[in-house]
Image 1: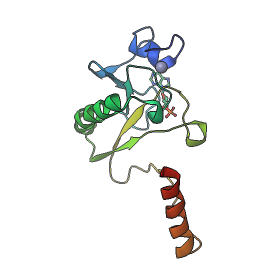
Image 2 (image 1 turned 180 degrees about the vertical axis):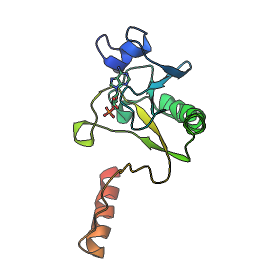
Image 3 (image 1 turned 45 degrees about the horizontal axis):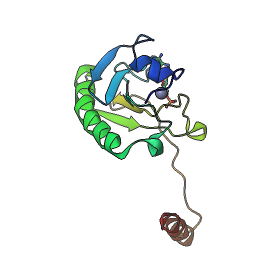
Image 4 (image 1 turned 60 degrees about the horizontal axis):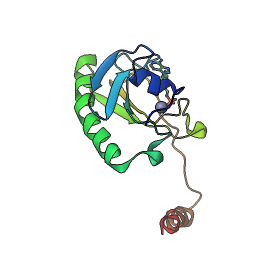
Length: 139
Ligand code: AMP
Ligand code: ZN
Protein backbone atom coordinates (compact mmCIF):
# COMPACT_ATOMS: atom_id res chain seq x y z
CA UNK A 1 0.00 0.00 0.00
CA UNK A 2 1.16 3.49 -0.78
CA UNK A 3 0.45 6.87 0.75
CA UNK A 4 -0.92 9.76 -1.27
CA UNK A 5 1.41 12.50 -0.03
CA UNK A 6 4.56 10.57 0.89
CA UNK A 7 7.55 11.84 -1.13
CA UNK A 8 9.00 8.40 -1.85
CA UNK A 9 5.60 6.85 -2.63
CA UNK A 10 5.19 9.66 -5.15
CA UNK A 11 8.62 8.92 -6.63
CA UNK A 12 7.75 5.20 -6.88
CA UNK A 13 4.52 6.13 -8.69
CA UNK A 14 6.45 8.40 -11.07
CA UNK A 15 4.59 11.53 -9.92
CA UNK A 16 7.91 13.10 -8.96
CA UNK A 17 10.89 12.56 -11.28
CA UNK A 18 13.85 10.48 -10.16
CA UNK A 19 16.97 8.95 -11.69
CA UNK A 20 16.04 5.27 -11.46
CA UNK A 21 18.83 2.75 -11.10
CA UNK A 22 16.81 -0.41 -10.37
CA UNK A 23 13.23 -1.60 -10.05
CA UNK A 24 11.49 -4.90 -9.40
CA UNK A 25 8.14 -5.99 -8.00
CA UNK A 26 8.87 -4.79 -4.45
CA UNK A 27 11.79 -2.39 -4.70
CA UNK A 28 12.63 0.93 -6.36
CA UNK A 29 16.13 2.44 -6.30
CA UNK A 30 17.15 5.91 -7.45
CA UNK A 31 19.89 8.49 -7.03
CA UNK A 32 19.84 10.62 -3.89
CA UNK A 33 19.30 14.23 -4.95
CA UNK A 34 21.94 15.45 -2.46
CA UNK A 35 24.60 12.74 -2.67
CA UNK A 36 27.48 12.30 -0.25
CA UNK A 37 29.33 11.17 -3.39
CA UNK A 38 28.11 10.71 -6.99
CA UNK A 39 26.31 7.38 -7.25
CA UNK A 40 24.78 7.63 -3.74
CA UNK A 41 21.52 5.68 -4.13
CA UNK A 42 18.37 5.22 -2.14
CA UNK A 43 16.70 1.81 -2.12
CA UNK A 44 13.07 1.87 -1.02
CA UNK A 45 10.27 -0.65 -0.67
CA UNK A 46 7.43 0.11 -3.08
CA UNK A 47 4.93 -0.37 -0.28
CA UNK A 48 4.86 2.50 2.16
CA UNK A 49 6.34 1.86 5.58
CA UNK A 50 7.70 4.42 8.02
CA UNK A 51 10.91 2.63 8.97
CA UNK A 52 12.42 -0.86 8.89
CA UNK A 53 10.51 -2.01 11.98
CA UNK A 54 7.35 -1.28 10.05
CA UNK A 55 8.46 -3.27 7.01
CA UNK A 56 6.89 -6.57 6.03
CA UNK A 57 9.54 -9.26 6.84
CA UNK A 58 9.27 -10.79 3.36
CA UNK A 59 9.83 -7.39 1.76
CA UNK A 60 12.71 -6.71 4.13
CA UNK A 61 14.35 -9.96 3.01
CA UNK A 62 13.76 -9.04 -0.61
CA UNK A 63 15.21 -5.56 -0.23
CA UNK A 64 18.48 -7.01 1.07
CA UNK A 65 18.69 -9.13 -2.06
CA UNK A 66 18.22 -5.97 -4.12
CA UNK A 67 20.92 -4.15 -2.11
CA UNK A 68 23.32 -7.02 -2.85
CA UNK A 69 22.61 -6.51 -6.54
CA UNK A 70 22.73 -2.71 -6.60
CA UNK A 71 25.68 -2.01 -4.29
CA UNK A 72 28.41 -3.71 -6.38
CA UNK A 73 27.12 -1.85 -9.46
CA UNK A 74 27.24 1.46 -7.58
CA UNK A 75 30.80 0.74 -6.42
CA UNK A 76 31.95 -0.14 -9.95
CA UNK A 77 30.19 2.76 -11.63
CA UNK A 78 31.58 5.23 -9.09
CA UNK A 79 35.10 3.79 -9.36
CA UNK A 80 34.86 3.25 -5.60
CA UNK A 81 36.50 0.70 -3.31
CA UNK A 82 33.64 0.04 -0.90
CA UNK A 83 30.29 1.34 0.24
CA UNK A 84 28.27 2.18 3.32
CA UNK A 85 24.76 0.91 3.76
CA UNK A 86 23.04 3.46 5.96
CA UNK A 87 19.52 3.32 7.22
CA UNK A 88 18.12 6.03 9.50
CA UNK A 89 15.13 5.36 11.73
CA UNK A 90 13.28 8.32 13.26
CA UNK A 91 14.22 11.96 13.56
CA UNK A 92 16.71 11.40 16.39
CA UNK A 93 18.69 9.16 14.04
CA UNK A 94 18.60 11.61 11.15
CA UNK A 95 15.58 10.30 9.25
CA UNK A 96 14.04 13.12 7.24
CA UNK A 97 11.83 11.19 4.84
CA UNK A 98 9.46 8.88 6.69
CA UNK A 99 9.29 6.12 4.10
CA UNK A 100 11.90 3.44 4.93
CA UNK A 101 15.00 3.61 2.76
CA UNK A 102 18.55 2.38 2.57
CA UNK A 103 21.38 4.65 1.47
CA UNK A 104 24.11 3.01 -0.61
CA UNK A 105 27.09 5.37 -0.49
CA UNK A 106 30.16 4.57 -2.59
CA UNK A 107 33.41 5.08 -0.68
CA UNK A 108 37.07 5.57 -1.49
CA UNK A 109 39.99 5.48 0.93
CA UNK A 110 40.67 8.93 2.31
CA UNK A 111 37.42 10.42 0.96
CA UNK A 112 36.95 12.25 4.25
CA UNK A 113 33.42 11.14 5.08
CA UNK A 114 32.93 10.50 8.80
CA UNK A 115 30.15 8.32 10.13
CA UNK A 116 30.20 8.44 13.90
CA UNK A 117 32.42 9.45 16.78
CA UNK A 118 33.69 6.49 18.79
CA UNK A 119 32.96 6.73 22.50
CA UNK A 120 33.75 4.58 25.56
CA UNK A 121 31.99 2.81 28.42
CA UNK A 122 32.84 4.00 31.91
CA UNK A 123 33.71 0.42 32.92
CA UNK A 124 33.56 -3.21 31.79
CA UNK A 125 30.58 -3.63 34.17
CA UNK A 126 28.66 -0.85 32.48
CA UNK A 127 29.28 -2.54 29.14
CA UNK A 128 28.04 -5.90 30.49
CA UNK A 129 24.96 -4.25 32.04
CA UNK A 130 24.15 -2.57 28.76
CA UNK A 131 24.27 -5.87 26.87
CA UNK A 132 22.11 -7.54 29.56
CA UNK A 133 19.54 -4.72 29.41
CA UNK A 134 19.21 -5.06 25.64
CA UNK A 135 18.86 -8.83 26.03
CA UNK A 136 16.10 -8.45 28.62
CA UNK A 137 14.20 -6.05 26.34
CA UNK A 138 13.98 -8.82 23.75
CA UNK A 139 12.50 -11.44 26.05
P1 AMP B 1 17.17 10.34 5.44
O1 AMP B 1 17.87 11.51 6.08
O2 AMP B 1 17.82 9.03 5.78
O3 AMP B 1 15.68 10.34 5.71
O4 AMP B 1 17.41 10.51 3.90
C1 AMP B 1 16.52 11.10 3.03
C2 AMP B 1 17.28 11.34 1.75
O5 AMP B 1 16.35 11.62 0.72
C3 AMP B 1 18.27 12.50 1.80
O6 AMP B 1 19.59 12.03 1.60
C4 AMP B 1 17.80 13.41 0.66
O7 AMP B 1 18.87 13.99 -0.05
C5 AMP B 1 17.00 12.46 -0.20
N1 AMP B 1 15.97 13.10 -1.02
C6 AMP B 1 15.02 13.99 -0.62
N2 AMP B 1 14.23 14.32 -1.65
C7 AMP B 1 14.66 13.62 -2.73
C8 AMP B 1 14.25 13.52 -4.09
N3 AMP B 1 13.22 14.23 -4.57
N4 AMP B 1 14.94 12.70 -4.92
C9 AMP B 1 16.00 12.01 -4.45
N5 AMP B 1 16.43 12.04 -3.18
C10 AMP B 1 15.78 12.83 -2.33
ZN1 ZN C 1 5.73 6.26 1.26
